[in-house]
Structures are given as structure tokens and as C-alpha cells.
Length: 255
Image 1 (cartoon, helix red, strand yellow):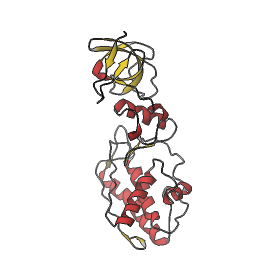
Image 2 (cartoon, rainbow, N blue to C red; image 1 turned 180 degrees about the vertical axis):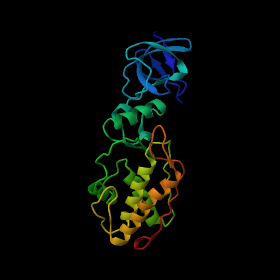
Image 3 (cartoon, rainbow, N blue to C red; image 1 turned 120 degrees about the vertical axis):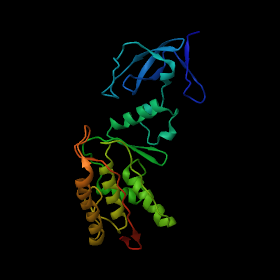
Image 4 (cartoon, helix red, strand yellow; image 1 turned 135 degrees about the vertical axis):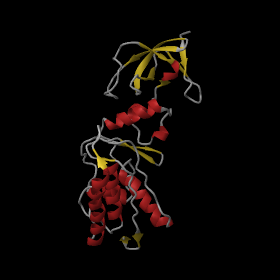
């Protein structure tokens, strides 16, 4: 009977047979795809199959390398498809999450849900995913795909339906795209309150009152940045402080 690997990171303690697809923890700290070649005691011999996920990978494709068994995970069947909500993955661990996000990223699908949480990967290029047509689709409830518009629209609908204050928390490391994501959410919210919005990207402009609110919010950013931004290795204009925006709505829209 061929040796196999007991996957201690899965609650069901499944076994991973030799020859199966796996993820192993690369020296760079990234989970990489590979094939399980052999298991001997606490060591598992793994053969990397690609380096496409991580440009900092220190693994060489098709070269067998020993790893601790605790650093090897069973591969997901559904993650290569890049599903929209990762709570629906067949296995839930870091390797599967990373492969799913990477699969979507390489299709220019930079947003992925984890239940009500939205995971965003900064593409460092402007993608054509902030159009008037998309805004209207989320506004009308016809689009449910992962997007900042979906998060902003859910917050607005909950506010309108339940009358309960809503919060949108945007967080991650420097250079992740928090500032731009904040602008997109604020722009969507300020136009969501109007009857129809207009076609200006990324969030559009509604009537003159809403347009003024949106412009004042966006114009405040350079002032804040002048006091608290700095150049870092990842970001030439990194926000070195937290931002808290309080947007109020009345029966006619934003105030």
C-alpha cells in the first residue's frame, strides 16, 4: 500500500495519497501548487508544478524538494475554477484560498467574496469594471458578483430598509489599494441615493446636490494626504494614517 500524508490542518484529518495534487509552504511564505511524491516520517517530498502564483517563489518547477508534513495541504478541486464565494470551496485552508484568488486574478477578476467579506487584489492598472452599466446593474439588484459596488449597495439597502447605521471597513497593508477602494465606495454611495445617477466613472454623479457632496469628499483627500502621506517601498503616496468618513443620508439623499 503506497504511503500517504495525514493532513493535520483539515478538521476531518483526510489522507493525501502519493501522486495527488497538494499545496506546500514555499520558503517565501507562499503556498505553492505541487504533486506529493513520497512521505517518509515527518518529511514529504513535493514536486512544484508551477511558479505562476507568486513572483517571489523560491521553488523550481519539476524539482522534488522535502518539506515538513505540517507544511503540506491537500489541494482543492474547486479552487482552480476561481469561484465567487470562497465559503463554497470544497476545502477551506490558506492554500485553497490562495489558489482561488490567484485563479480569479489572472482572469482580471480582482474581487472575491468570503461570505459577506470582500477580498480585493490590487491590479495596479485601471480595469474597465467601474462603468455606469455595472453601477446600474448592482443598483437594480441584477448583479450579485463580487465587487465594491456590491458591498456599498448592501450597506445602503440595509440602511434604507432597517434604518440602522452601517459601516464599511477597508483594511490591509500599504499599497493594497485602500484609498482607491474608499473613493469608489464613497462615490457609489453618494450617487446611490439619487433617482438614476449618471454615467461618470468610477461612481458617477447624480443631481447637483449629490455631485457637490461627492466632490467635497473627493477633494478632501489631497488635503489629508498632504499631512499624513509618505513614500514607501510599495507605494509612492502611501497613507500613513487611518481615515474615518461619516456620510449622512436623509429622505432625499446624502447630506
